[in-house]
Length: 237
Ligand SMILES: [Zn+2]
Image 1 (tube, rainbow, N blue to C red):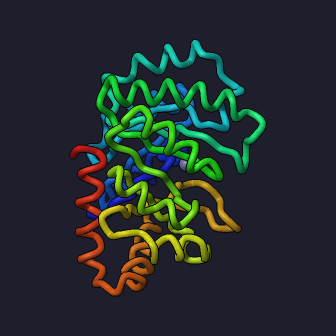
Image 2 (image 1 turned 90 degrees about the vertical axis):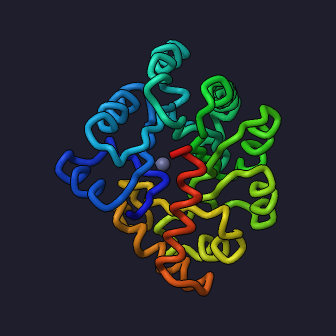
C-alpha cells in the first residue's frame, strides 16, 4: 500500500475516492463542520481512510464558536484532528482568532489522545511552541516548507513533517527532503489543491516517493517501508 498523510478527500467525487483508496491509505482532512461530517461518513464507507476533523485556519473568520461545539460531537468517531493550525503567510489578518481555535484543537488532541494534522505557513515556530507547551504527543506539520534548522527540533519532540507531491517543481521541498531524517518523513498530496497549474491528487505521492528516494539514495520499497512505519506511528494504526 501507499500512504498520503494529507488530502481533502471530501472534495473529490465518490468514484475517484473509491479508486484512490484501493492503493493508497489516506489521512483525509476537513475544513469545517460539514466537511468533517462528510469525512467521517467516507471513513465509515472505506477502510483505508484515516479521518481528520477540524476547521482550517482560513475559515476561522467564517464560523462561530458554536461550530466547535458541533464538531466536538464528532470527536468519538475521528482518528485525527486537522486541518488545523496557524497561518501568517496567507491569512495573517485573522491570526489572533486562529490562535484561539488552535488552542481548542490542541486541548482536544490531549483529551482524546488524537494526532494533529497541522497547517502552519510562516507560523511554524508559533505552532510548534503551542503544541510543545501543551505537551501534544503526536503531530504532523503538513507540506513543510519552514526553516530547515527547525526540522531536527520537531523530530526531537517526536513530530513529523510531510513532503508534498509539489516536490517535483518546488525547490524548497527538495531542500526539506535532504535535511529531514528518515524517521520524520511522510508524503502527501493535499489534493485537490492547485499548485502552480497542477491539480494535486493522491496518486501523485508516487512521484514524491521516487524523488525523495533518489535524494535519500535508497530504493523505492525501502522508502515506502519507512513512510509506512512513520504513518502507523503518527496515526496509531
Ligand atoms: Zn490541506
